[in-house]
Length: 198
Image (cartoon, rainbow, N blue to C red):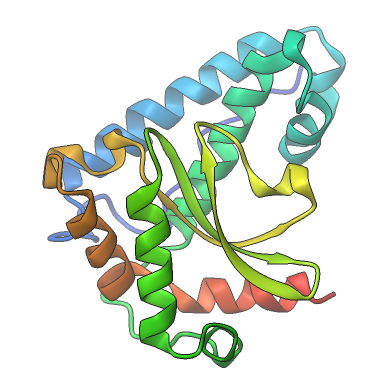
């Protein structure tokens, strides 16, 4: 029987401090994501979803009301994994020139990304995606994910409250600044950019 297991973080749980605390990472990754994985494994047991990849589960269950719980849990696992991979401790990576060119400057990209993430009402994610030939910043609500709209994810920021509330309380804007200025793994983004052009 297929069973999805927890994906490891690419760094230790204390590595992103002081911007994201060990307590937040242990709660976010170790409890929230673990619950989504446990839920999904139970939901797909003895179904055709047992035999396919996480990406395929997301695409095939999207838009089907009877399979919303499967989609929500699968998409949350994917979205979280993408978020955690997109960060690094003491990052010294540089924003790819393609992103700078698309948005005018590094500062313009950050302003537009922060504006989108700050304006997202409730829970969800802010993404940098490739949509055809264009790079775009979009928001998705709750567990929704760009892959079901044929967009290629390049970077995302989790703005569910559990991603930042222990460290920032209601100061989402400060969390966004910390992410953009100190945590983004631009090497990961560059790899996604290259793959999105294939």
